[in-house]
Image 1 (cartoon, rainbow, N blue to C red):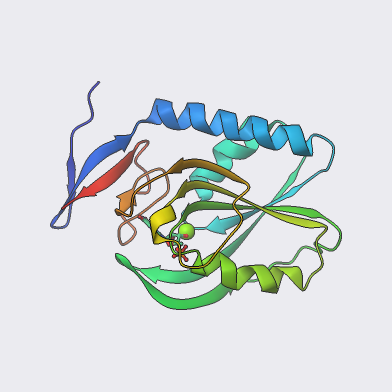
Image 2: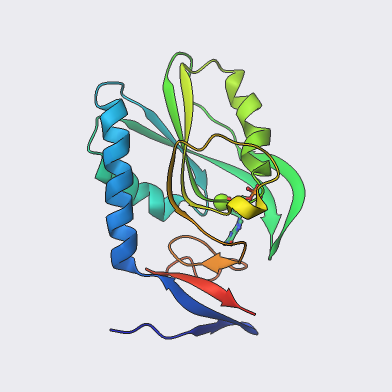
Length: 180
Ligand code: XMP
Ligand code: MG
């Protein structure tokens, strides 16, 4: 079935990455994580809200014993970064000495995570890795080592597969790109 463009508010979005392409890519990412973490019992730290769907698929694709927890950081409103990073849900787990895999839907400027990493480091995990489904390399202003990624995409706004435009579009099984 060919996906059609869709409208949210006065913006139009065109189909960009299909649900079956997403599935394949997440399987590959899961395999990469499995190669490194088959016996390490990693703690997946999922950044809400956007990463919840990707994380649900990724942890099942990994097929390794693991734990999962969530935090919420805020730096983004509407179509562009507001430039502030806030921790909206604090971590309860003791992460000392544990391998952490941060799960993000998309990395844009890199600001959110580059501000969050030093906060996380203070709790002395044994390692911190980053798994992001999408990376906007051209937009990156804060250098980040991304250990696992699905697609590198141009600097266009995308929705679907957990990603939203003002809270709309998260439920879409495919990813859509904003049409200019
Ligand atoms: P930074 O710039 O800190 O931003 O790397 C990361 C956060 O920004 C959000 N973001 C997007 N959300 N479509 C979205 O729905 C996009 O194209 C997009 N680009 C960035 C996202 O919440 C991510 O966690
Ligand atoms: Mg996000």
